[in-house]
Length: 385
Image (cartoon, rainbow, N blue to C red; front, side):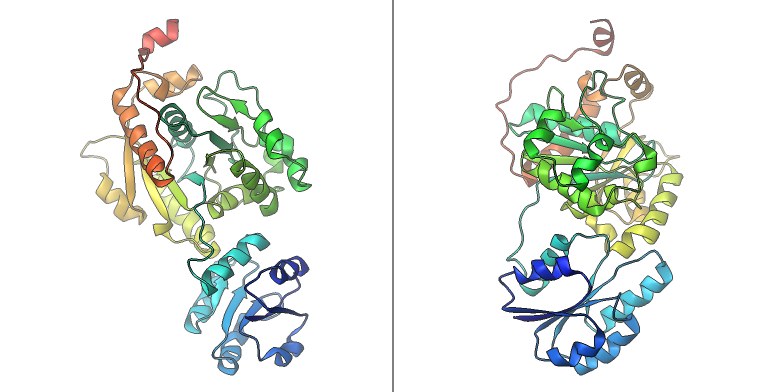
């Protein structure tokens, strides 16, 4: 295939030249050169050079080309809707913003040769509909049970820009995300060093999230993509706590780098409102659809005054994988003691977490350990032991 790239991104152009799918890659610096490359098979157009209003005319003059339109900004939602409608109407593929060059190339290859570039991504990302839904405790509980029941090496990345997520780990002694910001920017973080610096819990390794909220918007998409790629080299499965701030690079890259996306929420109406706002203003303009996610309803109360699972799935537009039972005051007590609920003898809670863990074991084909009886401490025994 011959490809013409109308873009100012020289790094993207250089990487496209290394893709074996393309026999020839030509870089166009401005629109006046377009007629010179009418014989190409694929065309990539940047909205920094070509306005979306010109797409109709371009499609009429080149009806048989595979055409991709790179969107650089989606913050103006009304304008973005016009761009999306124009592209869909003229069979032009949208390359959504906030992606690295490698992710853009992977998307283009997947469109042109479906099935040839598909690899199972050993990354699972959890996001919260809003704060205080038990996102971090759920991620760490799932990591604990995966580490206990499989031979897999489990890594957990705290990509919450507002919360390092160490409240449940009393003796946390690992590094924090903000401590390696410079190493990520300069691509100097070796995977072996990352594993050494992460905190080794009994059943998983943990990198605590960002402590310096002033830095939260200074992380680039390349920084976080690089971190995730390094983690993938050393762990059999990487779980990501991406928080609930969907407008930063940490959360977006956490979602872009995974095939399995879980939305953690509860039965509060404020969670539904927060989710709808975030999806409409941030996630949809970046290319996500609601069916990309599976929902986990935490702190679930089976009482008639609260919405049930069927109602929540309908309202959120997201299929529900599992609910997690509400444990009452135990959650607050355990948090105050900087422990995880899953470490206590709370059978209904463990059953719900194990359901999620079992789904991940089967999805990612993790090897299960031979089952041996484990005696768990009761709550009071744990406190006074």
